[in-house]
Image 1 (tube, helix red, strand yellow):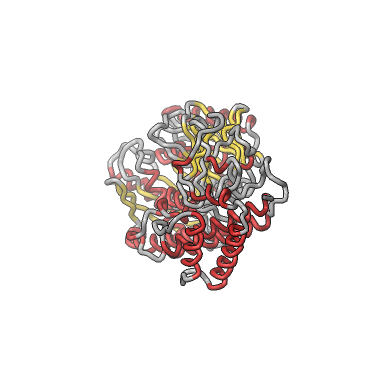
Image 2 (cartoon, rainbow, N blue to C red; image 1 turned 90 degrees about the horizontal axis):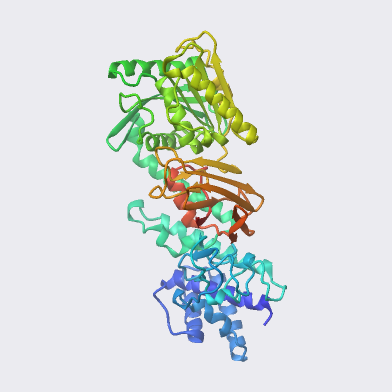
Length: 565
């Protein structure tokens, strides 16, 4: 039978199955084969949750299938694989790259990117298929028997089929399924947040989305989250306090200039002091509040937080990161600040904090400015995609601050020379000036304010800091297996992503339509070896997870590939 007819039949069958679940739930089945098709069709025809025009269309399509069946055409050889469970899987292919498809009634295919089966590697999975794919590069290949014939996937390429694939029909079918997902998401969101089911267990969360529907899903989920935050965090914003794990962060705000289109810039400016009495650190806090007028960033909200402890490492204890994450999100929701124009600055002990938090929270900042601090154990590697300013007095010899600042300048010079698209920096060691530079560091403010964050940069360099992190930009790893000093470099080049790793055993690569064309196949390589090749579907599961990891509306990703290295 021509491939276009085969694909049309299977799309029809998948649509019937999905719409039947919307009406009756997955537990509702009746027989197998032809009787099941008729049963589902009748349920859909009488379902008030599906528009009348759609019910009529589905009934007509079912009639066509019935005629084909009664004419003696062997359509059930095509349809039955769609009814198989994961227990039907047969092992095939080579164990170079394995795709573990999420269990989903729309597609139960486990797909191997390097399979020896009759299916071309580029057609193993596609955003037109009904599969949410997680990829394991080193596990045994596990390919469902129906994926060999390509009969349960709307693949772009099929080496064993006629080339008359009706791509417009494929797209239309996906569009309808994707639209249904938005409808189900909207219904899920009508429940109170504390009474909702785990979205990862919802069937609709694994159905592939079109680019437009993925953007709409992002908007719906962010609007819902922002509404929840506005409802539940009003008091902490009014009292200007954030508490986490027994620590409390207080802060003061200063408004500068006007609110431009797109929102104000946000400056988080950390005071000095450190291992001193609370009253000394409070005085330093007051100084940092006053510096807003002297540094004078344009059209900004200046926030000067009070460190939660009175010690030398006050700005880089582990709990600072989640407190700053929450502070930024609160300012996005309550003050409308621009998420891509968030900057961090600090003086003295606050400068120590910038050396530490600049790299380890790099995907939060557009740029960072360090004044009169010391890096301790920090590394500049993660600064690839942000601007970074260093200002120190030439006579600031305590802890060799002046010498270390110059060393960091040399490191950043070398990094920028090796990677000309990144590591933009400004380093000034001011001759004759002591620890207090009498505002000679003020030029760092217009320098860093010239940067706007790119949440999906084409290249990411990620070194695990001492405080282990589960994510930097579009890379993610499990902190249970992460080790300080591990380095990952990942570069997007067209439809390919090339990675180099040092000491990393598992890595998740997130993707968005800003980075590459998610409607086409994507290849992931390392040291010349292909680790993954295929389509990466946009799903609610990934959108939801990446949104809630950061509560950042501009740092959401739509698809994910998990690699075992």
